[in-house]
Length: 99
Image (cartoon, rainbow, N blue to C red; front, side):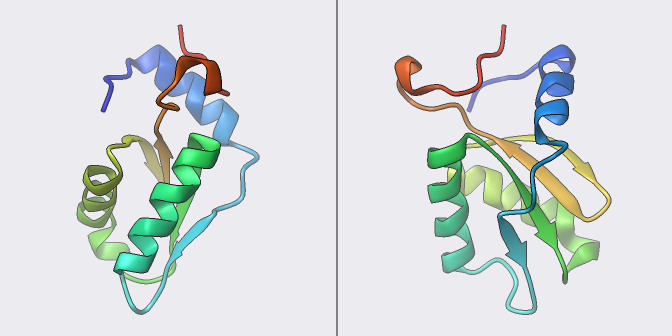
């Protein structure tokens, strides 16, 4: 997991603004399937939104659990939506360049 500063965080928030949530946490909570889907989606897109339809009171803890599993950064939680970022492992594959 890389460290992102406030300037980079703002850039990522702007990029995520028009994104639709890819992962939805429902009644079953954060299952192995949700974790794998998040990990695969981050590998493909680098930046995504996770929406909490259920477990809204535990969204911070659950988001931290997802980030730990996926080795991703939490950009921000806005309402019941978490924005996650994980840069591609190879620099040539990166879609988002943070300076």
